Image (cartoon, rainbow, N blue to C red; front, side):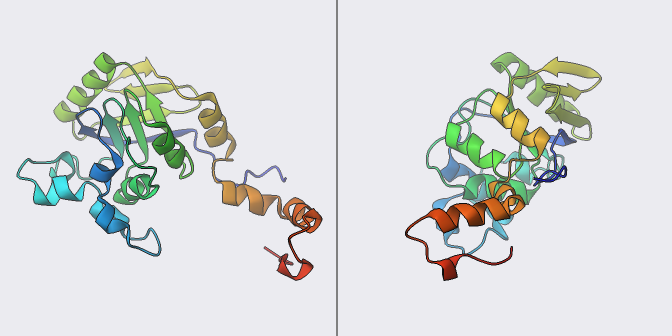
Length: 208
């Protein structure tokens, strides 16, 4: 592998915030199943929280002009539970979300976020509520997730947050994109494929 990382290093992300309150927000709320009938992930952003944004009488933060451009999402406990659909974080990323701060995340959802280069950091309930309150009071205020230092900065305040060691390493070293890692190690992949008895030589690509 060259000195250049396979994928861009994600050491920090920043932007204005968007508060999504409530525990156990599952992937079907984030992206309803009927919008999964797609060949690619392009355009999924328009369906993020579709039922709550468009079909519910309750106003949703993503439909609020104050938070529409927010890229740092502050959520509560067990966010992303339910199915393993990778379409959910794909929809959030394509809406414009670049990182999430939450009380806790469903494990598969967190893994799917990592595969897109989206940091998911955690803090206790009181801290997350304070961040959500601050975002609502300061919709134009920047909030930053520093992945390398495991901190969140907002309103002149810096707090420590938790980030999984493997996630932190993958993001800061630029190895979060497994496809990019395989391309960066193309010759080793070719050698391994050639050693497998069920792969014919003509099935092994000559170039990336």
